[in-house]
Image 1 (cartoon, rainbow, N blue to C red):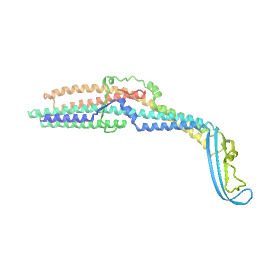
Image 2 (image 1 turned 90 degrees about the vertical axis):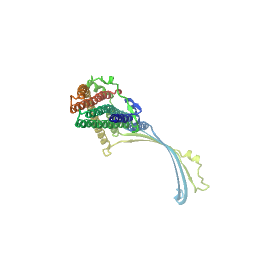
Image 3 (image 1 turned 30 degrees about the horizontal axis):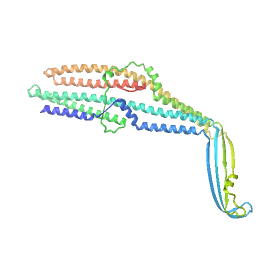
Image 4 (image 1 turned 45 degrees about the vertical axis):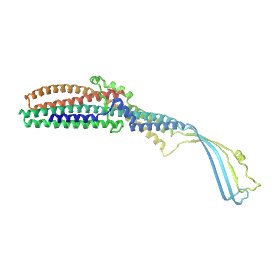
Length: 447
């Protein structure tokens, strides 16, 4: 009966684990694609790109002359001087005046030209910002993906340990029944089972949270059940560690979105100085107008009729052409202050660009060092795990024939389990560190 209970509890545990495993298998590339396609921050950044494109088109259109058409109408009544008799009379008048006007800048310090150039750069800044956001999300997906892999292996190890502990409890109970074990031994074994059950629960919770984290990154319903594809171990066992950090940095500078974004912001700031300086120069503009008018006086006598609409429109034509020159002399130091602010902004973004380069250099040197350290740690933990496994196998055999007490047995078992968890953690840390190098080199992340 006890064996049946233990078997059922183990099946229930495995069944619960199975229910957390989903129906759809998601690869690392699919996880990345889902994140990039669904993430709202990326969509928001894309909308900012569209706004930058509209701004660029508008700045180009600003080079063309302004052309406006206008129509005015006015009715008036009351006592007015007719202008001929000197007598104020009650009058009723109607005025109608259509016209067109145009104006264009002949010279404005090249502010519009430089604004177009800056807006082109700002459009590229928007694109680079989106790429940076995508790059950051990709790294988060990789971390979450590997956390799932680690927690899955951790759960397998914890489940196996529970199975061993439960089997050991059955054995201890049988030995107690024949008088070869004491109640203290049973109590110690039950403690091991309880500890193993807690480890399984902890591993299950960690796995559930890691699935939830990745689902949230992919922006899919949190209740979605899915599984991920584990890497091929033959590929994992031989990740390259032969990286020169300076070579990696030189390549990363060419492709890393953070540096591209910083460089574009510096170029935009330089154009900002040119725009600000443009307001120090005189502005020369030309304008022209063409219009006509129609006037109707309701009080005219039959001897002085109003001219017809067509005659007045034809005969009342007025034309105009003008040119204006505006020379800035003193405007509250606005123009010169604008130049100073633009120069300060340039120095700020240049500092940010250099900081980005310095940080990338430090991060890459650290990443290469971390990769080599992770490789060494993985080799060490693998050797330790193999040694602990062999030691536990010997202890278990001796324990089964009564040559080792329960304390030594449980200590050996704990050491073996700890070594396995450390080895699993080291394995995925090594895998992650190798993918970080690919990330900085702009390579596609695959397993």
